[in-house]
Length: 156
Image (cartoon, rainbow, N blue to C red; front, side):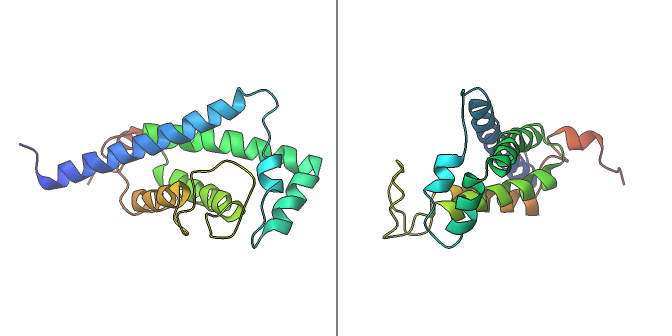
């Protein structure tokens, strides 16, 4: 019979793998979608930092860099989380990119972005939930027990 600590660690590992799969799938789907760009998403921003997001979308050079960072960033974050390697770096990186997604398109009452979304959740949406799940993984990494990080950890 497994003790509670092992069960909790397995639960965290499953959470890490699921989030890793989500990031990896999103990145690969963007990579293989011909002509994918973040321009439309950025142009539809109309909240606090909309000027910044519009500036990115309006500058072809910056937009190209942003698209590369989004695609390859979420692929690498997904791989790291899925495999349990560099978990803390991946969790922080994932939190940053998700926070930027949330700031560009927050689920706030009265903001109409003109893009399909799942409705208004009054602040909390799937991005914010995933942000906090990554925060939990940052605090309690499971890769050192169930992941590639296990092979690199220092033995006491």
